Image 1 (cartoon, rainbow, N blue to C red):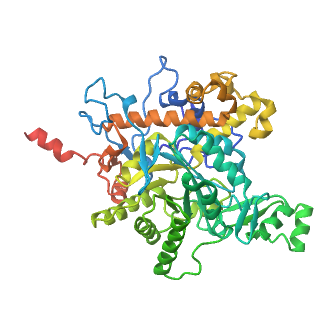
Image 2 (image 1 turned 120 degrees about the horizontal axis):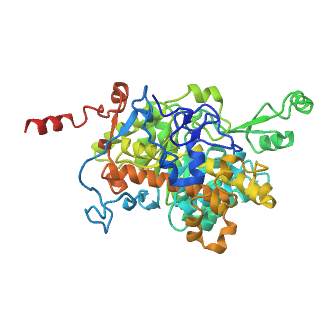
Image 3 (image 1 turned 90 degrees about the vertical axis):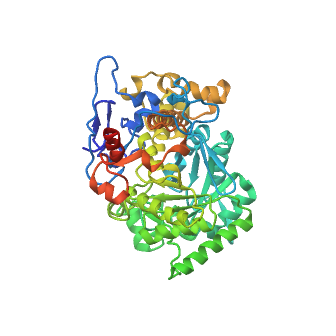
Length: 546
């Protein structure tokens, strides 16, 4: 069986729609009333690690083996003895080596180390309207947890209030809001990353950010993402706005300035128009030219003053994967995010997501192989983040182990957006005067929420942890969506700590590929992991024969 069942009776969770590899619904709605595992964990936190109805039940797993190749076809090994990679101050005693003492803190970077409290980061939250609507929750939550958050592409370009004159940004209120919201609660852990594509480069985003925010921001170059092989897109339902975007330099389809399109729009035959970004490197025909262009851009950004630069690549084939790892390493970048097929946080073409690119586990396995080739040649390999269909604490452990020692972070897209939606919907009900501001979608609390209470401090298991962090008087300024993100992160942290303790690894740097194994031969072959009954088999036989 696989972990993508629609209903989990043990946890009391259910998917509204068909679940995908991550366990999230194929189509995740911001008005959802529950209750997949991520949704419920955003309210109840680490309690969702355990089966429900304690004292009345016993429980047994149905996930005894996975078919096919995915992160669900990997299992985590446990060790019987020892305590490895103890954090400073711990001793190898039974009183010290308990799972709450496991450290989930880490860092990434070439020269400047960026610290995080939990080895996760958000996906790119860019010009999609859903990212803008819930940004207060996303950014505040990320800052409180202490994890990196990514401002995605095209934020300036689609902002009608932004002023751009000959490639120079004069005013960029939406980008400023994104950055400043995170920085308000930033305490030295995590980071704000601003992504840049073709149009952003033309619009002078890099120059604007470095001049206004200096080294507070990491700049990310974008090669692609796991959802699609073309540039990013959004849909707009205003003819006037579509014309504005075209004049801003975007590809707009269908052309809003054509009379027949305008007539069809006014009659209701066309109800939305899509805005697309351009493909990069289309004028370059060889790898060498791409490498030269990439290095030239990195050098330009360094001269502007950027001390930290990252790269995001998508689920292209092996050639592009090798180029990303090698070029990012040679350019001494701080982070490379490798995104496998096929999820998206916006308007990615459905059949493209279904049919394009390399699935996550296959892509990530080759990423490790290629990174090791460089390392074996004495090269320093760029720090890596894995993305693509990852949502649970076991996913975090498996991804870190699969790419060890190169993988430092797990990038979560939709999973970290769900608590933002949920908290905002609850806030809109409990405080009707805020409903429009937080984009609340509900008129009343559904039973899936009200069973826990009717006040934030009753509903969110992490409420008082956040209050302790920011102070009682500041809680009025914290979006409930941010509290939900903090609550979900607490579940992920506790679950990860337990898995790490079971593997006898008490800090992240201790996690290795030897901590996981393949449950079927196909996964063994494609990942290079040992088959479940063969890992340790020779040692076992030596014990028996001794």
